[in-house]
Image (cartoon, rainbow, N blue to C red; front, side, top):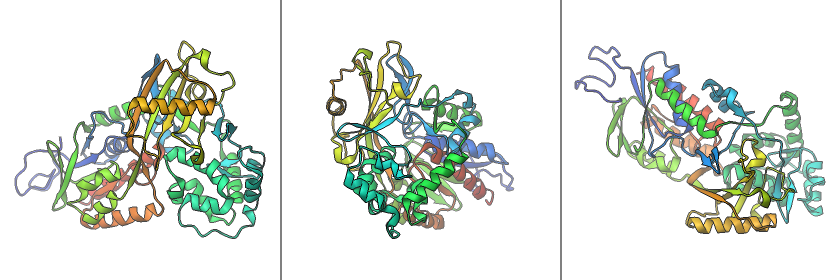
Length: 483
């Protein structure tokens, strides 16, 4: 779709007299939510014809989003099971795709932190940061000395930040608030070690550093959010058919608009001729006017090499963490009545292998099999805790042993599903955005018309990926309008 015969004096997509024949051509590298959204947006928003080809290295679209049947249920997610609603971009996309009426929200089941037993996560937190003193003063997670240390936070002088979440929070509140609240909550979202993760990459936390006291800033932020929120409005949402329904519908919309999606098409290199590009895959060349790179940073480094050596070097320095998610069906008769929460997080000092467990049938009302089994999803692995070298049997045994320690009973699942997500979580090291800016600045000088979008760049969550995709689409349309 991206290629046609042309005479030697024609530019791509033009007749000899300069009149547009088939419109401009854009290649999108990566068929995850960012790549598919970008493809759809470019065609939908372009004032003139544009051909868009999405190249996906795998045999399916969706990137790190996948939903499949499990334990008699038609759709149980193998990775992300929801998106943040209060950041509107993903919900807006779902509504645009006609999925708005099919969205559901989690139940009100409460989550815990495991530290010498299951402890309720306190209220009045903002991503683990106390918004009121009572958040830690009444919590069994924090020792008496830890509570005293946290209580003096408003009296401390301003902290000079080096863009590390761990560095900043430890300076403000001490080790226990960081290790038992902030790091479990943030780390579970990003598979991160927050001592080596950028504060700027988590805008809700970064905003709190504008004031001297993090506790007081969090209190004001929570009050403002509560005041502006609609009563009873959900924080998270998901299609009733799972997150895979979002990808399926998005791909269908993109192709119905005219986009071409090519699977099993791994990009090896990109070359440049004049103002135009040639994208070389394992079996074909695609000529185009502009490119959106919506693939993981480190995996994108090799095919940028011919365009800009420095940009390629910087992309190659990105780190990506791997995780394994094990889904279990546990018989109703074996599930203790006391475990009514939505799951628990394990602080790093307490971790062996399991980092978190979600009691899916408590969290989602539609995740309850007909026989009453409990669906549990167990996460292993994170930045600094690699588990990908273990075989499936070893991983299952590690998970079951940890869960026995955490919950106090032997688990004998009737069904098991193991999902490996290699290098699925890009790690935003301190000063991530400075490196990103350097990379993009270097590439813009040598290869204008190449734009980046996706989890590796300006936000990991689904709403952030959708937002980046929209912005990338606008940038591409602006670029090709000048050609």
